[in-house]
Length: 99
Image (cartoon, rainbow, N blue to C red; front, side):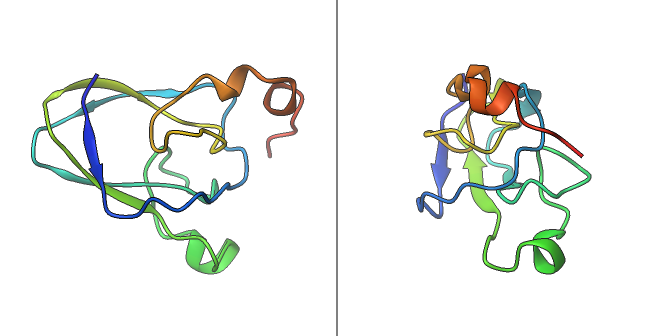
């Protein structure tokens, strides 16, 4: 697992974008913007859709501290953003409608 430094640590819960995490390769020192709103078409990363669809939610910006593969949350309900914590397995997420 690749640790990350968060620039924001607020507990914001967005729309459920996926019912499983996204496996991604992060590069040491590179900055990323994880989508918190759930509206991005480039999941799990931000594409600016929050400006139109969820103006009160901004992406979680972080810098990878190592190079490697991680699982980033797709359901946007994690207690450890941007990382998956297994919340996607809950009935709330698995029974949710995803458009």
